[in-house]
Image 1 (cartoon, helix red, strand yellow):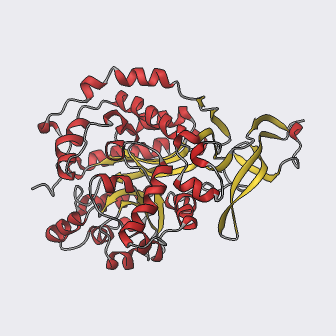
Image 2 (cartoon, one colour):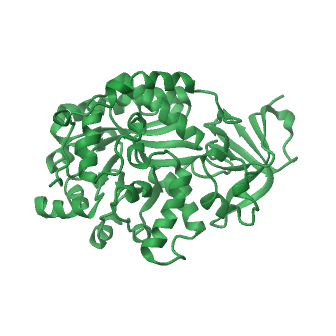
Image 3 (cartoon, helix red, strand yellow):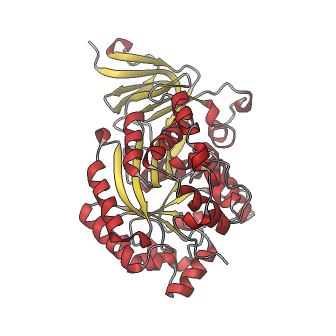
Length: 445
């Protein structure tokens, strides 16, 4: 009689032993419900005890990748804001384009983004966008895991904030616990102290965290000093934001004084290096963040600035960007990149049951092919994973114990139908009218 639900057999497994990542070869992974119950050398688990088998011979099992900051439905606008300065990116492209969106557009955009993430091995993402009931529905249907925050601008007022609070209450713990919800004010430059204080009070009452853009560029920090007399993190502190768990997106402009203050709070930072390179935003002080004890995870941001939702690519770029900025090739070695991607991502989203393959952890497992020419020979599987692997190597994806993709075939999303639905909306969505933009980037001019 079966005693567990899924047995993944004969794979190599990325595990953490004595605080170091390593790959153990030819192991089986047993899953019961939504948890891993055993990882043992192949042949030690009776296959007759499993309801379902997945032969993974030659594949590498890694924890489901964690995307700590994204705007998944922005796939609707992929390729529409290329080679422009950041001020124009916001004011002439993004916020005019987003003014065209209707709730149903967001549902189909979210499904397309989630399909891309599954194909890239992402099983958990932290979302910061609009019309989040539609995003939550897409998450529920697709089988992935998400922390969802409904983005709100200060000029939209307390009534809009209250609407996002009701979203938090509706969806917290939904989809069998796969969905968590936070509040998501856009940023200190588009939300004043009073609005941030009101947000912090409501987050505290709801028992949730806050996901917010902060110190994205050095220019934003200079603007904050002129406008408010303090840096963005100090403004957030004064508003009480750090009285709840906080996820800061980007933090390129965090100062030494900011970090000395932040280390006393439950604050994490999401890093999206491809966006920083593409928009010439600068390099974040990742080593200083980690030295201050902050959790640092990896995100993709939206695809209008990063073009893909590929966390493997962001892992590689994070390491390369930090080495280049420091002019030191020893900076951010393999072990540290792995720690940021997996343990760091789990800490950033306050979800300790993900980010590792071990008995008792949630069964979020990604299987990658290792037979490509770009992955041979395999002298160092960690180096191959960070510097050579890509989204096309992802063969199968399991989230919460359920197989979402097998042999690169999506099992929970009808991708051709999603693409068709998105395609018929594109002519309307790609229109740009500056006077309709959702907000104005204040650093412009």
